[in-house]
Image (tube, rainbow, N blue to C red):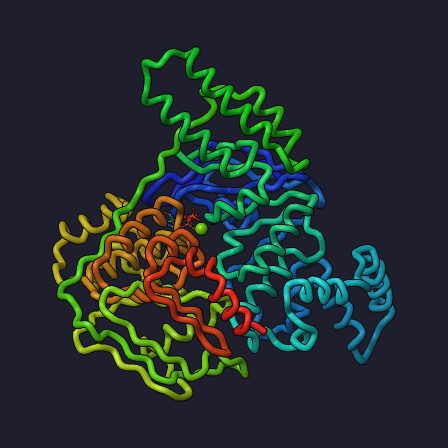
Length: 538
Ligand SMILES: Nc1ncnc2c1ncn2[C@@H]1O[C@H](COP(=O)(O)OP(=O)(O)OP(=O)(O)O)[C@@H](O)[C@H]1O
Ligand SMILES: [Mg+2]
């Protein structure tokens, strides 16, 4: 159990939390949700003790171990994969290192002997003998085969590192598990595996995610950050979202009779109650639903940013020719003799399970890395803007948001820049924050503002919805639908691909499929394409 007592936190620009009281109990999986910048990552850091509160305290039940999914992919570069996983259980890892150091001593004294026997007994209490095999099992389940286990982390490619860090967090059955956007860099299969893991997990899990489907599958409760408070609801994401919309509607129709409101609410709750499928959710949710009143459901204060791209000039018809492009990374073929011609107005979605191949293609087209062979040529009249999957390097700066954006603008007047930032829902004091403290989603909003300012006629976007809240995803989705130029993009957001793309390109190491004039759903349903896809994945 972990309890939060009267916690408040204030940053210079804003009060994030005031007097938050909440108790997280075992057996539950809490989905921590809230708009970009509302304080989810900060709250997890408060829970884990990484940052201090302005007032109030966090109390963890005695002897309980907290485990956190680490965000820094490079922090364990010098350790082997297996050691990195075991480091997830710090106490056990410390015992192992101290023990190893003792036994390695040339002059092993009596005192050392006593210490060694203490360590041995703690080691066996913590099931130390099984440490390596447990870690290996977890790694295997996450698709990291044996031959990688003894390699240093730095030799692994990004997606494998992410899975090792996930294994580290889950290792040794932690009492309290804190995961901040765990699905962001995960492939579909690992995502499924994590869902199963969390459904079966019997201790306390607190998970931040913007992925509605994921939240619906794993959560017994939703903790919503809004208005500087954290409100706990029993149920999954869909229940929370529908009930808060209902509350909003009912409030706006203020003269509607109380009795009518109550009836509507009761019907709504009854509908949800009949859908209680997962045993774990059923009991506690039922209890709360029975007591729920309309006053307890608060409408949300989420805001929509404005995303819209204008072209400074239209591009000519010939935009991009790719000829026989090949690239192999770490012995793995990304694509081989790949051809593609893109014309004005194409909105091309790059699909398929190999995310790395898509990212590598973007890197080549942006001139960041060379292909092994083949060539490509951008049309003379193209003006391109690129959204990279990893935007870290843009934000290693202490410029405030206004000055940061000014670097990318022709009109550098304060009024103009502030106007732009206002559309991206940064206002007043908020725009004076240094960019290196921005949350994941706030960074993406800044990147989008930068792209909009350039008035490009071609957009290259590598998974732009990562980190964004649902309001921002919706705004981006609309902006891309309206855009009259050309887009080459990849995305894990099914709806974005379905509504934006008019051409689908699937690249694999064995070849590619290219279908114009087709939506993603049609592509997936087409029998002939299904056969072709099967042939590419044997
Ligand atoms: N050191 C700091 N000084 C000032 N403001 C800060 C500092 N650290 C974070 N913030 C601000 O606090 C707010 C909360 O940040 P946090 O990273 O917790 O948001 P989040 O809810 O995780 O958002 P996202 O969904 O985008 O990841 C943001 O507006 C951020 O800019
Ligand atoms: Mg965050």
